[in-house]
Length: 485
Image (cartoon, rainbow, N blue to C red; front, top):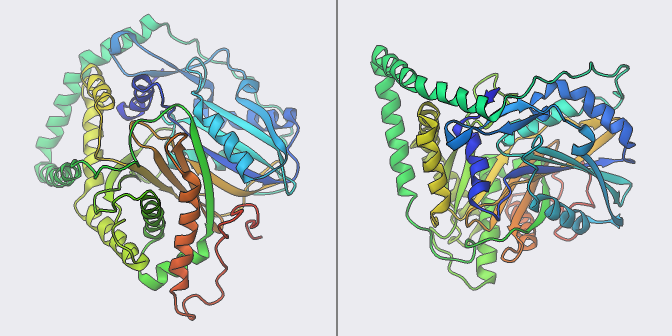
């Protein structure tokens, strides 16, 4: 029995408080060749499950929110329930795949089973198939979710099925709800002791404690400044249950050419492209583009060295105002860069870490109502979420089939009608756009992201853009270009 952190539990509570929300993250992995038979796929997954214990565990809850939810073995675990097959009408194109993704991600995962699914998608054109991987956010963040690909896939096209079946899994007997509640009560009684140890540690290292307190205070002041409501727009508001999804991709070589020319980072270019897309959408809708119209939540990984494989959320965040008011693309890029440098300097992400660390030490019955109240209160200070995760840099394979493209998905919640996930794989950077079905034009966002990168490239001098490949064209953006060998 392993207890969730307050941050992990918050993603479950978001679903409890918002009927229109499914807090699963996901990706689409597109493979060359024919899909493997179901029995071979199940054997391949079964051989990897010992490396991912969480995939055979479900959530158990104590009574009265006396403690956080816990992970327990699922004695009825059925791999065939989680690895499913479906198809789009052949020859399926991007639009068919994205519509299927929207329907899959609109449905919540079954709380009575391990919180993940994989969907094999057949019928794609160009002799391809896809694997939709869907995992609840309480299990993984973007970084650990991407790490799962290294566990499930292989670096060699020659690696096939294991010679032997894995040892028979023997689940531990799951505790009853009363036992889970009793354990929570014991932990609750021990919380003053943990707090006393924390205070004692601070007293023993006063300089380090004061330094951390000052950094945290500075970050909290910066976060408080971002609590000012964003300028009213149709980018945020009530959302329904259904979703829309679109994706586009650009080459990493092109993005790096922009980085070299303007002395910025890959993340700066990605956020500048998102800024340009939101500016185009606002202008198309005849709405104002002001400095605080689009404030985005930017997740920041706070994983320490060696924690890459830890299957839980290790994230903080920054709240960034995207400069949609600037008409010039280079000015937008430079403004994004300066703003992110400033947010790092004032330690916004460090303040978030301090808050989550403190929440983990507080009695859960005090923390849980605060988290629930946050989801009940209508918020107007965050308009969207943009998350950037570095993905695998070398080609991966599943039973000899090469992974040619990796497209990310980020959930939306509260009043956020748009979310953009950014994920690199080999020599591509993919942008996955999630939107509310009734209020989000995700196709426009996808087109404008691609156009924005082309616009920045077109301004480069010939010597700085020499031998670069073009980004994918806006029309039929994903099917025409494959990852290079």
